[in-house]
Image (cartoon, rainbow, N blue to C red; front, side, top):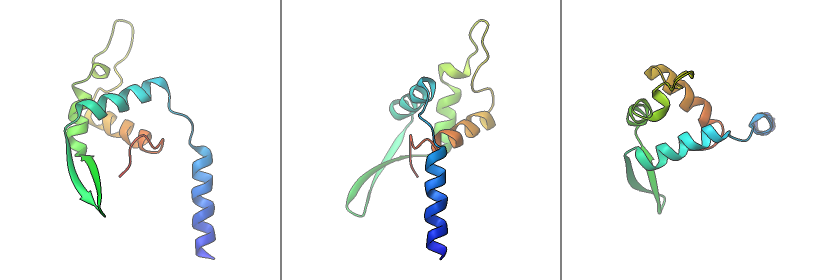
Length: 96
């Protein structure tokens, strides 16, 4: 009975997930190539991972943290960068 509810929950969650926007893909790609990573072996597979505080620092140093003329910056504080990472997490652009 419990398993059915969990399966139903995840299927509903996946239905609500939309395709990432161009901007979200660009930010994820920027993090992929500019955020410092570490490597480990997990169950025989090589896994790369990053530290969240380093990712936030990386975002705050990016072009999205600087406002262009007539536009607002995407990341103005650490909290805005964390909120953005949490929203992108549900688009499955990176995993935990």
